[in-house]
Amino acid sequence: TLKIALSLASNLGDPSDDMSVTHAAEGMVSKSEANSLRQLINDSQSIPSDLRIPHFSVQSGPAASQVLVMGPDDFIVAVVSSLNRPFGSGIITPSGILLNSQMLDFSWQNKTMNHSIPRPQNLIEPGKRPLSFLLPTIVRPSKGMCGTYLCLGANNGDRALSSIVQV
Image (cartoon, rainbow, N blue to C red; front, side, top):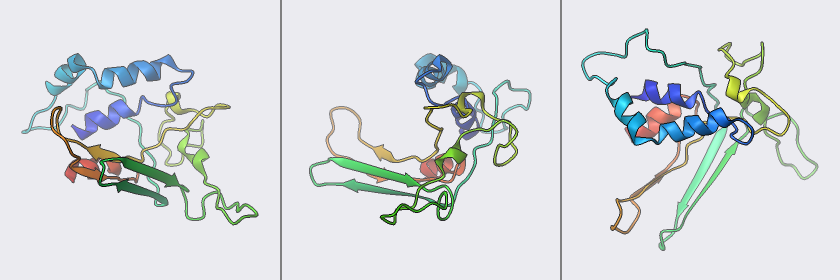
């Protein structure tokens, strides 16, 4: 299940100028797509290697943090910050703020961080937002029930999703 989810997520990027990203996101929440993907899941064997789901590695990063706050009135605030490296870009503003190296979250032609295949939807372009795998997560009960069960977060590239699912 996680292999399929990460493969589908590799088609994501900034949707502002790429309709394929919008279509990929719509497919990820489609009930018909979920039904067809469910047929691929088998508890007694892994996904066949000839499956035509593209896979691109997701860079892991040690320097991200999240704060999730849930108040007594069920309002929830998630703040996510990523320097991407210890000390971020290495640039400090005159007021002492470290600037991040968020540019590393883009896929770069011939310079992808972990030598994986660059993801076309996440190639660097002016004004584009990079793909990020920080996952602030809120678990709520089904409709008609009040309250919030859980707020949690994870980071670290492709390991974030499995961490959230395990919790």
